[in-house]
View 1 (tube, helix red, strand yellow):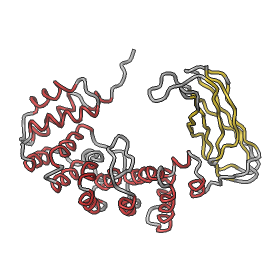
View 2 (cartoon, one colour):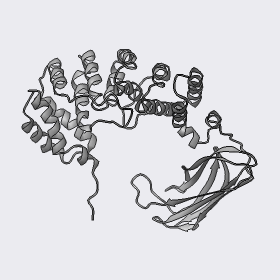
View 3 (spheres, helix red, strand yellow):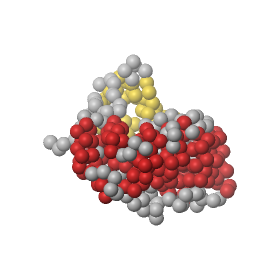
View 4 (cartoon, one colour):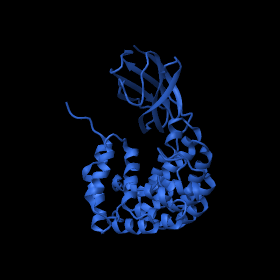
Length: 372
């Protein structure tokens, strides 16, 4: 039986810890071997985030107690920046994340400017979106001032840090106290960035805001369309990505913004599931038939009202297809849906479930099935 993949072991292991140690040894800061031994001695039982913190703690034993001297040592030991000519998917390596934690732990209170200098440099090796949030909370005005400079930085990883580090709902990130009036002016300068790594972050940032004030995002996207400072193709991708949560929720304003008619006429709209009685681990075929009296762009989803432990229902939306229907032509769509047993993030409960066909955010047909 194949051994289960372990992300924490893939990212933090003797080889990667050794790489970090060698950077410091090559810079003449400290010998790598004892540092690696100390890290590995306590790292084994720790989970991923705890490993990052542990490496930062061990690093503090080997670096100078004086923060400016420690900052000099880190700067001397860092590898070359990630390739600034790329446009996307160059994330660097997690082994440099402990450097940001060290900066948080030792530079936050008395060494603001030097700490921000370090984060600016480290993020060009691995994103500092989590570490920067401590500085946003402690020094919001000063950190935002620095970010206003970073939006025009030569390296796209630094530009991305502005958007990603200020996201209202960054997954696994500490909560920050900024409001949208403080962050949107930064996005106004970043949405026209030439790199997808940055524009994806901007779109994700907007998607976070839609969970609180969707109208604000729709207004901003409309303004960006009029300004015409980003390519039409890229801005369309950003608009779809930013509004994906609203689209799944059937938000009429988001649908209209993207050119989808919420009340589109349908001459045929049917959904079915086979079999209609299942047990966890089974797969079912979901089939949809649709027809419109005129050409119409459609976003077709299906929604399952899953039974919860207390007997109530919780809806979950699944994407099916986005396309333009042709007048009078019946379209059939199918998808195999696995009711996965023992999923790590979702528990199936027995009972009568509902399956909905959702077209342009509107439920147009419903059937039931049973999970035993």
